[in-house]
Length: 98
Image (cartoon, rainbow, N blue to C red; front, side):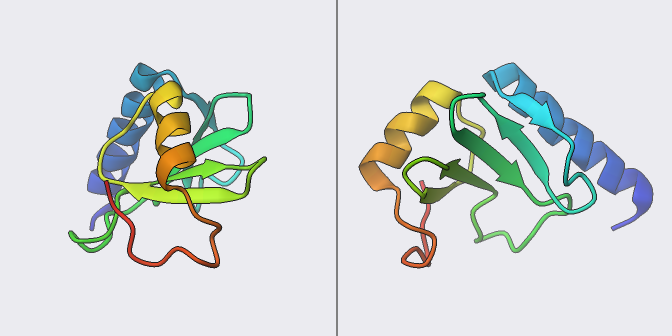
């Protein structure tokens, strides 16, 4: 993927995070695109597309140490609900999708 396409991909993800209500965190911007809600939840994406069958985004509940992969950008409230219902500790999750 060329540099221009990577930049467009990154910008599209950042905009989708912001529209869904996530605050952007650029602390690992070279490796990940991270959104957080300031209350222990995060959503992350890799800066380049992965395999089509892989989850696109990873939801993380830092307080409960739960994670869950999803295909769409979800608002923090919905992410909290999904994590509560389907989240697993990172070491136990393998093929997870919504």
